[in-house]
Image (tube, rainbow over all chains, first blue to last red; front, side, top):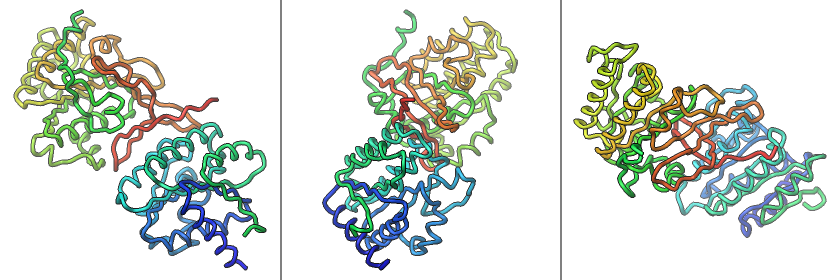
Length: 193
Length: 251
């Protein structure tokens, strides 16, 4: 059952990102782990592409413990926005640790700096995991402004974006406004997979 | 106005080498300008100035950094942490690091307070060094510490004006760091430096959710149609100083 679910998610992501510059994925918290697994498996199957994964949800250390193959992956770089703020100090060649998830301008710079080092012909992808968690650490207005900047900058550089939004009570208004900036919205429901 | 007679070479720009900053300046600092780099302690003035010199040296422009606030060994130790800091450029003489306090001592100047004659002697030596080394970029870190030794506002005014005029004639672009208290909106300690300078760049802080975000703003730049927007400034060992659009909370 789990494999069907993950495969279904991978297929939806693959189909959507092929024809859209940016996709937003809205999902209930209960599907979060499945979606992240699907994303990492999808990324792992595309060694010729360059991916930047911004995590505001789980520390990089936790992610690589769960998905060990990420340690060897050459096509993905992480930006961890939460470890430093939580007092977790580690150094990894594959991950940039941001001082705080409220330093959004710095986050924007780090994203673009990683892509600057990627060969021009390589297809580039950005994952923001997640907009809902960015709103926990910042005012919704400022996250909206940040996301506008990022979407516009990545579009200008032909970088695809996948942004996750975990549905939470009280955040719908802000998340709807953010997520509809994307070219395509995927709503994850068990029944649709 | 005497200040406006200062020679700023038309249309020639001195690229800082910091992409976003050069865009904001419309190509770079007008060559020959004297620019005040204002900020509180730890705001990034020294790093930005050093990056300006190193980037210039990489383009073949020789530079000199006069330090008054910290000894050379400390300055170089701090700078070695940045990947932009190319030691070879220092060793080859493209970037010259000089401790102004040692020069003052060698000239026999009083280290605490300068007389008019002392100031004149120091000015001559600065001009001679700039001329002899044929530098196109010069930094004094900090002008505040130097002004502290000048005893009257007139001496400060006269010193900066004469220094700027001589260096402009050599087509040398000068950055003077100015120390101000944190979270204040003033450009200098003595209230004179900003009126004699051709440009002012302000390095500040903004508090967001308890975190301090570095900010950068060009307040004034004679001879350039420059941006006046406030930017976020980042300092990292990998990239040095970088600027990004500042997000403006509506709250």
